[in-house]
Image (cartoon, rainbow, N blue to C red; front, side, top):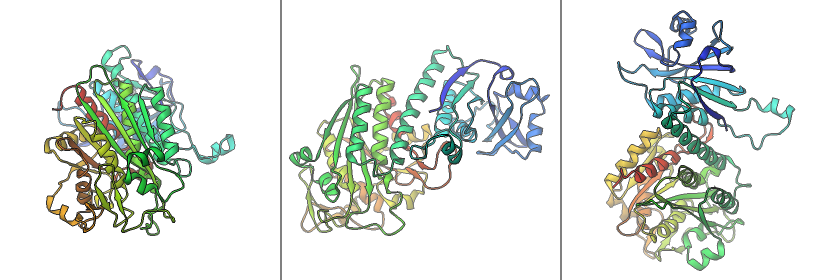
Length: 508
């Protein structure tokens, strides 16, 4: 991962491969953003005009390269667009800084060191830029050939080091912001690695082993239930989904505790390490990216580890419901009835609606500890993608205030989300003539139906929310902002922010 450092050094004397500055879209053309004063001065105050001549407008995501001015020890100036210039006396939005830093970091792939002279009004801005750099520089090349010749073929490696200019290395708030950004982005990038790992190398057992190693490193208590323990405990949902695979399912419990904690949060993640659809096989063209169906578990895992690294004063338990959904002679069939961990029975009408089955068992297990709130995270329904697109996740909850708080936390950290309802009239569609509930209901509003199903397995009186991250969890298009192609690590920052707010007493 890109090393992040703070510096008060003057831009002209800094040795680096490039210096990154911000340019905004002003009413009369491009405007050089604060932080780049020394660079602008070296161009005799005409840097905005030079950039405009080169075609720069300051639009978000725009990159313009130009030779550094005389006297600079850095050979290149990279101007990155920040979008619209803020109103007078207003500062740049943190997400605009985060995205610009990410674009610049990706553009500087192959560089050893870059200096970032973007606007830093306070420690929060510093944290946003640091996050953007670390996330934008991400690459996944574990499966590429190694060696010098192979390196030349596979392209440039990520930016090695980034120095944030205008920051104060000895300032407590600045140091804390950098430490937070480092912990969160390192774990988020680890979640991306897990999502990008092919399913032949990341089955439930392998995922559980990764969690065990990380837990040991960061002082997190871990418990892994294998197929024997799941059978003994009556986890019919997880076992039913995993019954068609040669790779046995697992339920992993990660427990971070603080002696000063007054609240307890439970995070539950869907961890289908590969989803073929089971007997209800997915159609051609829908299987190729199904290694990403464990993105919810990856997000929960990363969030718990990040919370532990930050030492937050809140107890957080993570539940990873891990299984591989495959068709075989032993697979669950449409029409089968499963007895869940809660004791309820579920008629399986579609084996490709498997995520809700593993989550149901994990939600009930989490409920037994009576946490103050439960949040589950899952790539659950294509219906949510139809509703919200590929960059926004949906939030459902049994408590309106909690749903609003989660939405605000998501927006604060730059993860687009939208509150969704749980209409009670859709529950009737899941009535089964032979079981307590069916795993399918009405086709219209399918994402909401899935949320209603999950609500059935949350303990009475427990505040709960469901994040359907089917859209933004895996980016099949080109990279944008600080988001790479492939696994994105979405929801990690929202969960961490929720834990921070809870630890600070800002949530009821």
